[in-house]
Image (tube, helix red, strand yellow):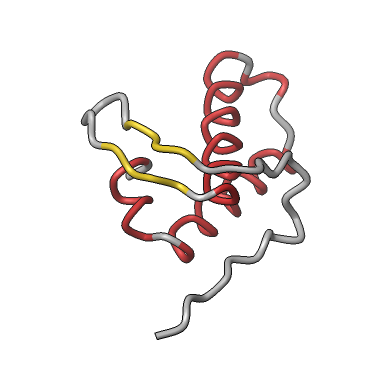
Length: 87
């Protein structure tokens, strides 16, 4: 069976890491190994959530739209990791 290569979304303007790593859900303590693209988008999601919570008056419509795009990308590209880390 051939492996499908994930594509970097065109809308994503964040940094793409060279390597992935294991990420731990701080609430459940479950972990999941993410590749470089997944980790880049995961960090983007977590950074957005931090800004939305701590500085909501600074949030733009584009940031909210990209946040939802990132969540959807994660759901579609690695639903198992999404369920462990973000659901």
